[in-house]
Image (cartoon, rainbow, N blue to C red; front, side):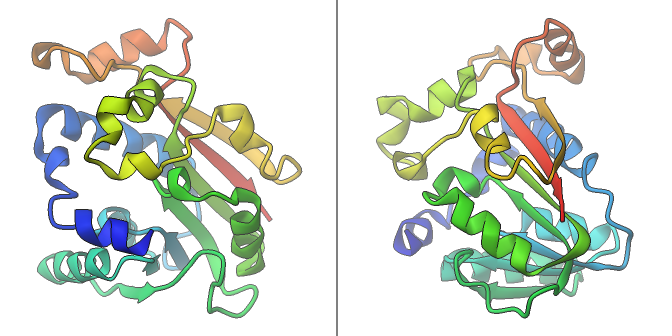
Length: 225
């Protein structure tokens, strides 16, 4: 899997520069960060940090951030991106199944668009809880398998030339089941269709579709230790 993400690292962020990509990024950030209420200044681990998009957001919010990923090329991009913004973030090459930290190290753990590529989710969660302090929180955001976006990413056409050929998407219920005893909240977003006309991309359209009560294309969940 490391080599897979290394090979896609170069153009990984390009989609987020498109009108639809910018919208997706905005709604997913709102959905996830609204759940994450760790006090500013505390230590946060970003699992599967990729090119550092959320590591940088968390650092700009005032957290002491450590970002980990299995892709050396992604980490190189993350370091360059953080340096451009003048942010001090520690980036480490590390597997979520073998976190090289003492127990009770972090006040919060954040993970966006990484659990799609984790096969043994409960093992990953157990390791994340090990390094989380008592009272600390974990927020995970992932594509909802039970949605139009989930259908898109699991389609044969989408899988041809993207990292999603290796993805294992989960439903909201499957994510809840990872640790129901510590689950305290969840939310979903991205109600707009991946096939939407560019002129229809807006927060107004997003909110109108949300009010219809369907499941969103992206789900965010919060656990407290």
